[in-house]
Length: 351
Image (tube, rainbow, N blue to C red):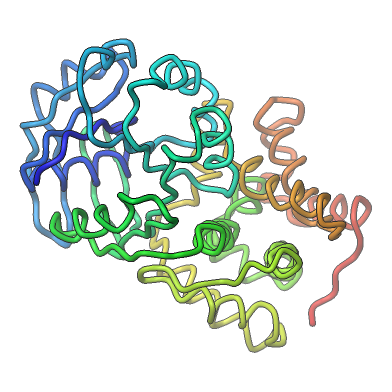
C-alpha cells in the first residue's frame, strides 16, 4: 500500500529518498523554503543514481508545518542537518496530536532522544543513510556512492519501512539496536571531517601527515571507548564495514592502519570535501561538529571517559564557525595547529 509521506528538507538526502519514493508512486510532499518552491515545482527533482537519470515531477511542496495541519500523512522523514532541529521542534510539537511516525535520519546520537522527549518515544524511528549524495543545486542530486540506509528500533512500522525503501530501489537494512547503528554512523562521520575544515585541507592531505593522522585515530578511539563503556557495539552499515574500520583504528599500529584507512576514506568521499568544510566555507554560520565530536565529549563526561581530542576539535571548529577565530588561523597552517593542539591537550606520538 502506497504511503503519504512528508519529507522535512529537499536537500541531498531528502531529495534522494523522497524522489525515489515518489518514483515508486508514493505521495510525497516536501517542506522547503518558500523562495525555492517555485523552481522545484517547475523543474522537478533531477536525480542521477548509478548513472541513471530521472526527473521527479509528482511531488508536492509546502513552506511551513502549519500547512500540514489539515493534511494526513502516514510518515514524516526528518532529513535536514542536525542544527535545524531547534527550528523545527516547535512546529512539530504544535502538531503533536496529529503527527504520524517520524523517521529521523539526522547524524549524531542525540536527535532521537530530543524528539522522543518532545513528541513521545512512540513516534520516533531511528534511521541513517550511508549513500554519498551531492546536491550541486537545489532540486538536483547526484548519488556519488550507492550504499543504502538503516532503520532501527522496536517501532511497529520500522520493519515495514525497510520493505518500502527496498521496493523504491534503496538498499535498506533493519537493526534491532538503535544505539549501535547511530554510534557506528557517528564513527564514520568523524573521520577526515573536523581537521579538514579547521585546516582547509582535503582528507588525503590530512592522512598524509603522520601527526594529523594520529589525531584522526585518537578522536575515533575516544568515541570507541565511550561506546565500550556504555555497552554499545559497532555494527556494519550498508556499504560501510564499520566493525573492520573500528578494528583497524583500535588495534593496528599506525604504519599498518594508515594506508588502509586512507584508501577507505578517500574512496568513500571521492573528490568531495567533508561536510564540516562545506558548512564552514559556505558562510552558513552553522556546523554539525557539536552534534558529532561534541556528542562524544558529552557522552564521555557522563561516563567519566576522557575525550580531549574531540573536545579540542569541537571547540576550535565552533570558534571558527562563530567568527571568534579568523578562518585563516590554521588554514593550511599545520604547524600552528599542532602546536596549539599539543599545548591544549597533550602531545600525541604515532603508535
